Length: 349
Image (cartoon, rainbow, N blue to C red):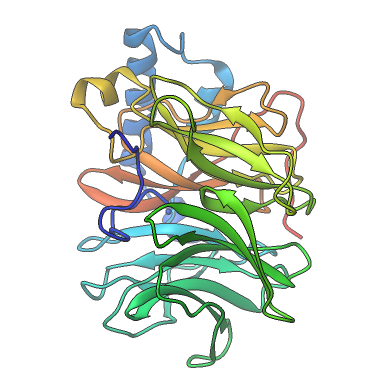
C-alpha cells in the first residue's frame, strides 16, 4: 500500500513531518548551497516541462533562501516558530541517537536542549502565548502528548495517557485545546481534541498531522481518500468534526504536512512523488517539493522546485516558510519567502 509518508513502525526519525537562522555571521556566509539550489531549480524546471520555466517569483524566492540549522552528524526536523518569530523549536538527533527537542534563537546559532531522555521526543509546537511547547514522546512505552514550559527545564505535564499512540499535537488559537493524531486499537490514525481545562476528549475522524487554523474555525490534516487510491491528500474540518472538505488530492502523488499561513488564508504542504526526479528515483517515503494553496483549495502554487527532498513546512510570523531539506547528504532546516502575487509581506507579532 503506497501510504506516502506515514509512520514506519510508529514514528521514524525520517518521518515527513521539519532551523538554524543566523542573522549575523551566517547571513554573511558564502552560501554555495543556496546558489546550487537556485541553479538546480532553474535546470529542473527547464528540463521537466511539468512546472514550466522558472517563474520570476520562484527565482526571487530562491535568492532569499536561508539555511537555518547546521547539523553535521544528526538530522533536524519538525520545526515550529514561536508566535513572535524569535525562537525555533525542532526535533534533532544531533547529540544522541534518539530525537530530542531543541530551542534556537532565530537570530543566533546557539542551541538550548529541552529534553534529555533516552526515548524519542518529537513534533514540538509552541502554544499561542509562546510560553509552552506541546510535543509527543514514547517515554511511557506508547506515544503520548506532553506540554512543557519554554523557560523551565523539567516542568512537564502529560496530556494523554492511553495504550495506543498519540502524536503530532497542535494548539487551538485560544490555547485551551490540543488536537493530535491518535492510533486506534485497529491501527487506524484519527484526529482527536483534548480539552486542557476539563480533560474532555473529542474524536473528529480519520486523519494525520492536524494543524489548527489561526482563525480557529478549521483544522487542516492529511489522509488518503476513503474510496480510491492510497496517496495522502490535504483536508480541512471544523473543530466539531463536521464539514470535511478536500483541498488537494491526486491519484498520482501525495500531499502531506499541511500548515497554515499566519493570516489563515493559505496552507503550505509538501508533495510526494510529484516531480519527475522523485518519480524517477521512486521516492515515496520522503518529500518532494513545498507548495501552497488557498484555504478554499484554489490557486495552488509551487514554492520550491529543486531535486532536494523537502517536507514538513512551517509558516512563520515573519512570512517565511521553514522546512526540512536534505542537501549534500545532510538533513537540516531551511527557509524561503514564498512570493505570493498581490500579498503584502508579513511581520512578526
